[in-house]
Image (cartoon, one colour):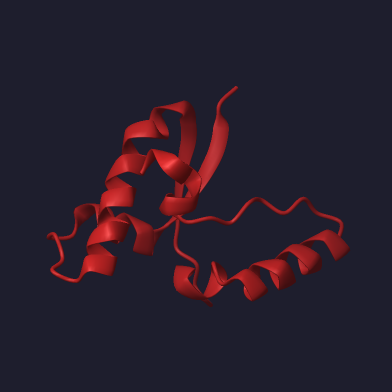
Length: 91
């Protein structure tokens, strides 16, 4: 059974956008391209998070708060990470 991965739409935009001259954005684009190469081992779902965008959700303090709220509600909280974090040293 494949693991599931949910990709927020702003991450997809890094994959399809023209290569940025901004080095930080270009790094995110490179990580996203690298992530796309490993997605064959996952069931992929693209979601559009209406209330917050990925930059806000992936904040360490926000992730901790989300994890606690989900856990207190009796649910399992999926891991929230960026393509950089998913790939680790393989970037």
